[in-house]
Length: 432
Ligand SMILES: Cc1cc2nc3c(=O)[nH]c(=O)nc-3n(C[C@H](O)[C@H](O)[C@H](O)COP(=O)(O)OP(=O)(O)OC[C@H]3O[C@@H](n4cnc5c(N)ncnc54)[C@H](O)[C@@H]3O)c2cc1C
Image 1 (cartoon, rainbow, N blue to C red):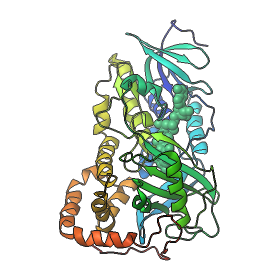
Image 2: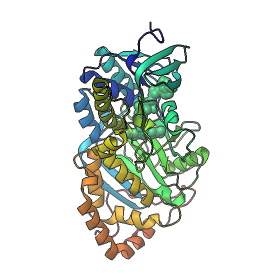
Image 3: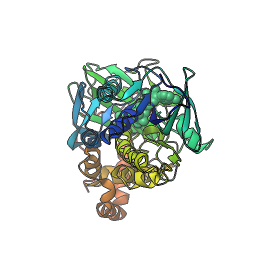
Image 4: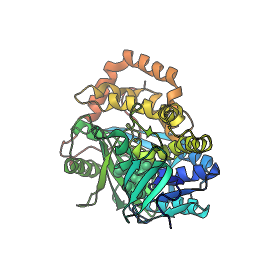
């Protein structure tokens, strides 16, 4: 039982998803024991997500001393599709596809087992920052105080609202559904018993600025979904129609009302992520703008945030003015900043995206580089020379590649009904 005003806790973490569990784990590693995690729902709770844990998650698990101990499908290859172009890229380390209900519950159970106090079914309704503490008002009407509040409360973060006020930015939109693997599914990127993940950019031909995915999940099921970058406005129903049409091309039927999702904001290196005594982590700080990835991102950011808060509690410096820069300089921040830039090129409105898409698909090195980044074996942001090399090659080959891209998209029925499917996972078009 806590009594407001009597003594402030060291830290209240708002939200018990991957970011909240990870930052609590990091603080515990630093010996910070007076931590309370408040989670609005009770685990296992639903979270719309593709469930793909990239290689960076492995590093975060190791850094945080957490375990992946729930059923998962290790996916060792990514299949990239654009119309009749299909190319399979081997991943240096598998992407482990989990179900979020299991995963998030397991993370919270692990930090609880270390002695961290987690209260579920109690959300934070408001925070108010005073000179020497923060007051947190909960959905059960409690007023709690803490020296520091960490907002790990996801895309609709109330803690971020405290930092950004009413600043408006357009969100990414992501929708997903989990389906039983259809016995007939055997188009490009989808095959029964196949553990490859499909990233299908074909919907870009129909105005989507993003991609459709099909991931294998435990229990002979598939996780399907679509991500849209906000360079153009597409509402939820239109995106679900696009998802349905795209899935029909690969032999998967999307039942009515099966897809769920919500808006998520992309990481911006200059967006506020802290104020005195308050900082945000995970979706509250912004997801990867190119891929919509955010689980490993949340855990990596939690390491940075946890280190800074633990130091601040020791030294009394709780202004956290250096947090934004610390995030930006960490591997996670460098990759997020690069992906933000790539997303703006690849998902731009109008037709300019074609030039960049043809570079991604037809350059011999670019998909491999990105696969290494997804696997976590390379930091793409540190590969500038290779990226510049690819750009230089593209200057010479852009015309041929644009033609190949056009041909790859030809014959696609815009209603997504009759599409010539490739039976083999091979690439087509210019090889370099
Ligand atoms: C459709 C979709 C597909 C995605 N696919 C992938 C993918 O394949 N791979 C990947 O890496 N990322 C993916 N993402 C992104 C990923 O889901 C998020 O980046 C990730 O969940 C971020 O973790 P988090 O802990 O910051 O936020 P969340 O997982 O959203 O957790 C926040 C927690 O805070 C709680 N909460 C919220 N408000 C309050 C409050 N006021 N008080 C107390 N508790 C509160 C919530 O109940 C929740 O449990 C996807 C997102 C979507 C929408």
